[in-house]
Image (cartoon, rainbow over all chains, first blue to last red; front, side, top):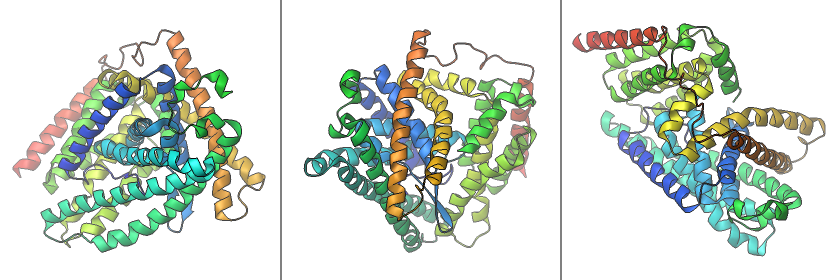
Length: 225
Length: 236
């Protein structure tokens, strides 16, 4: 519920256009601030592939299916900019399959990037007093709530824009009654999965979860092993 | 996601004229159609663009279930959106055609164009890091999905799907942790190999993605027909 997957033609031009512009600026700043080393490029590509594979897991929730995003854990592993780049790449591939429109790639990347950024910011604080697994789960909860709220705000803007054309007020209460329960269920599932990921990484690659958002290329391979 | 895998297979092995046409001309046609679908507010013109998208999808010899799958997803979200903004007018339903058109065009493009040809022009307009990451992601995605399927099956057989939901999701998370490390390894190995072989930021060093073939006449024809239909639609 923190990624749109809304198709083309639904969101007004001013919203998706400005999101695209902002996404381009963030992508450029991200690659400038965090040098695009071969290892970083490879890991952004790899994590995008993992994100796409994880999205393929269908967790049935009554009439709908829940799809994981893992933006929170990826933000913790790669940092906010890294999570944003991962979201940009995976969103582009999904758009070619009709999952989320071409015009929505920027907006989707911003929402998922926001989730990753919040998780990356919160995780170091939480991990000071807790183990990696509860800290990653907690950071994912907070990040998902923030990104989910942003998702609902985007939907309100989009439906309001449509309402101005039709002259009929948008049904915000209906939106809330659908989105909020799904968001809360999503928070529980994503945080449980994040807990599992951190528990596993803590055992086999503790360097990845104990250093928070230290760029991965800083960690030498020999040290990591 | 198996939708992408199926489309990828057909894109490389399909025999329709669309498959033989150059990637650049198809991308131009696809983006024109999507732009028109978004820009038009006239139901008649929107209908013309939508019919054109159906014609493209149906003449590309893609299995109908794939075309349907590509349309179902945007249709679901559009219906939700329609529900939130429904004004009771019939023209609201026609407004649904926009996302459906975009979905059909996307499935036509990806189902008739092998991915190196698709990424080659993209890698020329986006920063190298983004183009390379896109390519690595697409290449490693299929093997990771296979690993994920095997892992999920193994988890099921070994009782990973038992117990409370919190336990099940946690176990799934541990599995995704292994997938994450496997992804790192695969991505880095692939990129190192590409660099060793002289990769300098151009996906597919060849230029056949922009070489015009006789089958590009079909794409030109589609442009002409679309233009004519739009003109006729605008006049009536």
